[in-house]
Image 1 (cartoon, rainbow, N blue to C red):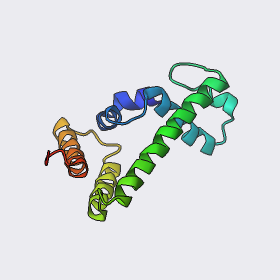
Image 2 (tube, helix red, strand yellow):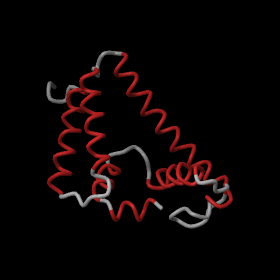
Image 3 (cartoon, helix red, strand yellow):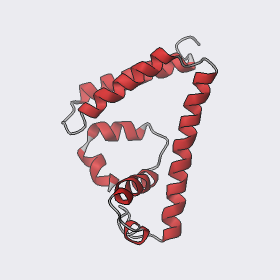
Image 4 (cartoon, helix red, strand yellow):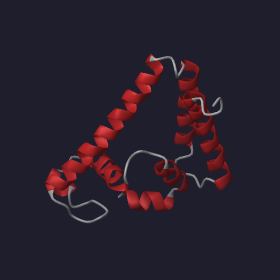
Length: 134
């Protein structure tokens, strides 16, 4: 499922490369999200992975890894806010960027725009990690 999306959407591909999920984890997470909502059973979902049918145990293990990575990302975000490393104005900028990305979802995005988006993300990251200060 994710393989086709990554091939068709250069923005998605660019964001994915910088994420902390593997392709298999993202595929499992996306399948769980999309097909559980639509009422597919676990038996049906394990047959839909990009890599082909897998055992329930393999799928659930990979899904668990994806969920754990996602949860850890949220805790990391909460941690840096709690410690004052990340302020609410930066979160606001990130939310605004996310909203803009949502509006671009089904459009062909020029590489220049993707580079600008990555620059904004890197700028936010640099402020958080103090990379530009060191």
